[in-house]
Image (cartoon, rainbow, N blue to C red; front, side, top):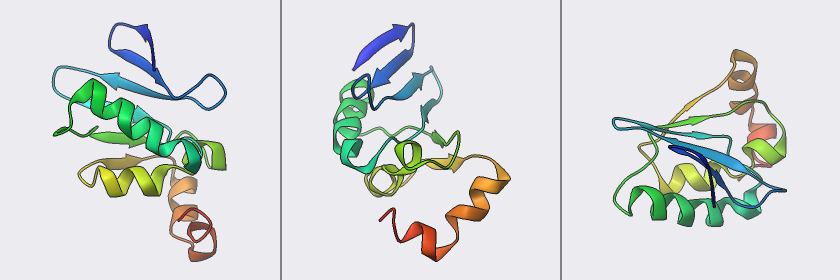
Length: 103
């Protein structure tokens, strides 16, 4: 975990980053990284927000495995977190052939 600017953190390592933006009312996780990094992201999010808090939003920038692979794990651990992304991404995420590879 590395602070980038006030309220902005890079989670994970420099090869597999995702970003957490914290605010006074809401927090946003930008991308979910690859699946194998998701436990690291979860621990770092809990360290920054507290164990009883969750990011409010998960913004997915695009559908590449290194940006969405950790989403299922993170959504299981932060069930209140809502997702957002492009319409095209939304259509892909409901296709069982694609989501089977993410679980």
